[in-house]
Image 1 (cartoon, rainbow, N blue to C red):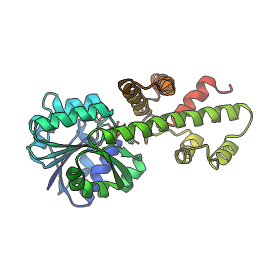
Image 2: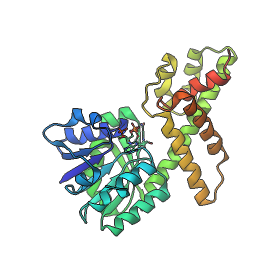
Image 3: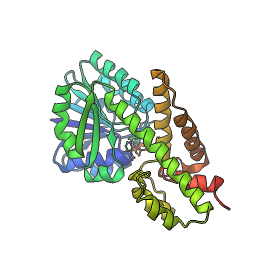
Image 4: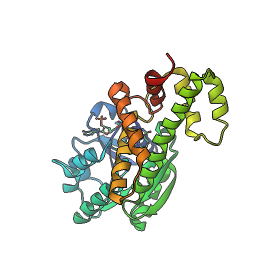
Amino acid sequence: MKIGFIGFGIMGSAMAANLAKEGYHLLVHNRTKDKVEPLLKNNVAWKGSPAELAAEVDIVFTMLSTPEVVYDISCGEDGFLAAIKPGSIWVDCSTVNPSFSSQMAQRCREHAVGFLDAPVSGSKIPAERGELLFLVGGAEDHVTGCAPYFHVMGKKYVHVGGNGMGSAMKMVINLILGEAMFAFSEGMVLGEALGISQHMLFDVLLGSPVVAPLMALKREKMEKGNYSPEFPLQWVQKDLHLAAQTAFEQGVSLPGVNVVKEIYALAKRRGFAQSDLSAIYKFLKEQSGPS
Ligand SMILES: NC(=O)c1ccc[n+]([C@@H]2O[C@H](COP(=O)([O-])OP(=O)(O)OC[C@H]3O[C@@H](n4cnc5c(N)ncnc54)[C@H](OP(=O)(O)O)[C@@H]3O)[C@@H](O)[C@H]2O)c1
């Protein structure tokens, strides 16, 4: 079984490395070749384009930034769907909106190719440790066929439903993630303005049921002011945008998402795009905290 992997950012690099470590034969491609170099060994070979890669494999994993990029790599000029063998499977692990995943599933049907939307919950460190949670949408037999790979890259997978449903679950999770990180940061800014030490705030809040467990993982970054990216802030804004778009498509109103999305947009414009999402705290402190 030959596997193709496209997208060697923070997440894709770690996921592909785990497949390679397990001994799978991988063909790989990324826009920036430098990021792939450390992995190019006996069982991992570089391919010059997505189409060249897809022509030789039975399964293609993608871990790319946005729906626009996923579309370009799969359906654009030199996209891999024109080259992929009928009967192969494409597993898209990128965080995209559910209607986009359904659209990609339809494209795959036209090429007699299987499709799974399989975004992941978990960030850089769970990806490195092979502890991601895969949220999967698609046909049962495709899910079962891909289960061994999910088990190498993750600790668990959940088959949420048909195509689009993995992305649907991911939208819900990241909506909560983006809003929770923002709410926690606002609480910290107010607490510090009131004269409570940052240390005391962390100690009390992290033991409180109102705070998401994620915040404990962000404590060190926020205390040290080191916002090296695990989950880049620009992708949180992207996910809130996709959640807002999905709400529009579903005819539901999500006022909070739209407000919080715009605050991340401001932080992005102020230079925090590539910082970890927890840098929203630094942004809020700079904008509205005590001088
Ligand atoms: N980081 C996390 O904690 C996390 C957790 C769960 C899900 N996700 C999701 O997983 C996906 C990847 O996230 P990441 O953190 O790994 O992002 P990342 O480090 O920014 O990597 C993005 C990937 O997309 C590629 N890419 C971007 N623009 C492109 C273009 N115009 N043409 C071709 N390739 C392009 C990048 O190629 P280059 O290397 O050439 O830039 C890279 O391979 C996103 O959808 C994100 O929302 C992230």
